Image (cartoon, rainbow, N blue to C red; front, side, top):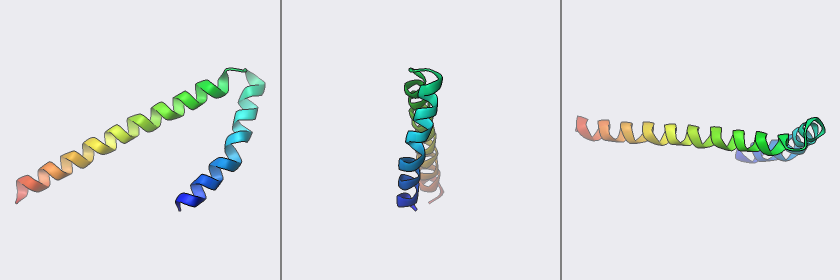
Amino acid sequence: MNSMYTSLGIIIGPAIGGILFDVNINLPYIFAAAVLFAAFVMSVMWKSKARESISTGLNNK
């Protein structure tokens, strides 16, 4: 599954970057920063939920 998403990114990424570059030269960088920020926020939320479940699991024992 991970390989599928990597291959999809390799195929679609340059196409999206090219389209954004045609619109504005800075747009691919802004889009990449937004995607990275969204991934960071999702990973922080996932980590806090994992910690929450671990701490509640320890309290139930």
